Image (cartoon, rainbow, N blue to C red):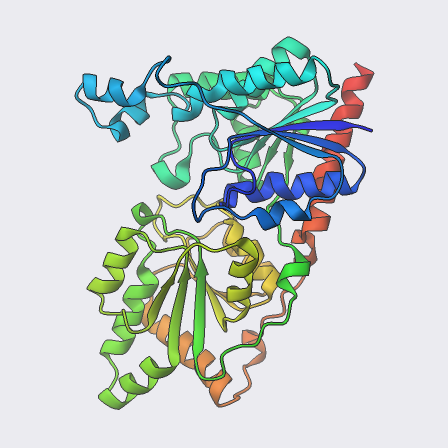
Length: 429
């Protein structure tokens, strides 16, 4: 039996999107006869836990919870921030590659304790946070075990910071990790292409693409839709720094142009469900636009329940912002869940890989600029189709062509082939 060690900051029962990719890989490997050992942070109590995901893993599987260093006996960043008169958010910008670098040695020490009595054939580190790869680098230098680096997002963290550049120290860390890794995986073709161009001296055969995925067993369940309402669903957070609120401004414009009777009708049948999106900024935006009557916030829920709520919808929303600060290679995990649910997508995005995926799968509408009239046209057309049973034109049909390539089994099969090939190459050296 082959053994893979996965070092990750996020893993179920943590109910966050970053936990899904290593979870799905673990589930697939165990099903294929591998043993998987996960090194991750202990789960925290509260509503952000979803233990049901762990029940899906069948096979030889073990989790080692890595306890962070005792802040009473190590550098306390909070005290340091107060000492220099800066806030924690300011101090975080100085810590490279991220604040989780404080935990790197804990991962390394936990792995070393395990390997004293156990065999590990291959190690995978998955980020963000990107400091997790420094733990993998330490493991690689000491044990020379085949090492795979998985970037769910690029090191420069463009989706939240809004710039491509890396600091000198971050650049050094990234080069060190990519140079020593046996394989480097990115979540999109764009991310992988950028790494190949940036590290042109490294054999391009080292770089691979594994997208995120959806579980067809969950997305193909039958869920009855509300016969009295037209529902648009959005799952996950909004990155407020990207100005992802164009859809809601278009909604306000739509209602403002209605007659009183039209407004009464549409507000009685139209609903937007925001699942796990109730941050302060988003709630303020909805209030400022006067949309409280039609926008409903749902608290974070289990992954399976979130998919069920998605399946209730008549349309799903992606709103990543349309400005230059939004990365053209960004493929949010929700895109793949939406594809699996086969519900028409309304995407307010910039040109890039996500637009290419939606076009190629013929799965929805793409708006590359803030076009209020187009949003109104789309909504009124879709509402008519539901309540008046009007047939869409051929150009407006959504057929979800070729989405099987994003299904979990197929994506994880490709992931496993990269792992097997990496292991095979290392044995020949």
